[in-house]
Length: 414
Image (cartoon, rainbow, N blue to C red; front, side, top):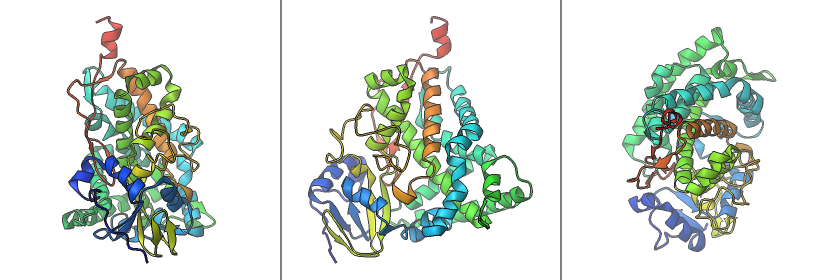
């Protein structure tokens, strides 16, 4: 058993110093300490692209860690399954997130929700894209897709915030743990009656489709559906929220690239893909090997928790040229595969547990970006803007204050 000591010069992953600037720590980790044993987390930490990629793709790495990391707040989810059980469950939920269903049924839902939020500020000349758009947009979309009541948005947002805090509770704060467990009970009390009613009176929504879905006599129980909806709200809300805000923060900080995207909207997927590499919304995912494995920095015993630093791997100079620069034209990122299991970046993980909602996220960002660029023809960061990111487990801009000339004023020649 290899025990790797904490390395001098690298701030503790749970410290305020690390939170303020993880990227400086990532550089030292990759070059000097590619394998670290973190005693408080009881986890090995890997940071190089080749090691994180292997942990996502090699079948020796399991998601058994989700039994304690996810199940207490979500219930048993698809992420914990393996083999045929995982394949069948994924086949039950995946159709709603594929091209045809997504384009025909849910793209209008995405467009409507983007338009409604933009209508609230399109004539104001200024907006914080985090608090006034990104925080609300993906949750509103998912709630609409499931056929739930959008007036309950604040409850959904509270729940997913609590769940994400639980998942990222690296210091095991008891109050965060208690809030997460309380959220599981509250969400179940809300969702189970709706699921049962939807079984009796199905509609044309995603929740009804989940209730009807069946493969070889296998269908989803009420608890299965509730757990999937909980996972969808947390993962689909938090990640798209932060990715969308980060993409605009990155583009607005690089006006030449913003202008290129404004003039050629086919570049939006490239801008999104590069954002997922450069500033991913999820910075770490855990795995558990079923047998002893050797990484760049040493051996990890079977049954250990391995924390895979996506934020570090996605800036590995062994994989990407000039990795600390945001460049939507970089050759290593292929937008045609960036939202599939063949993606070059690691933001959606890889292999059999590749994010089932990747195409949904791509569609949401494409729709939102087009509408925002149309509504804000000369968008620019506020003069007093000071870039700040927040979060360790998940990470994104604290705010993105934008000033613009409303389209109506442009048309009137004001």
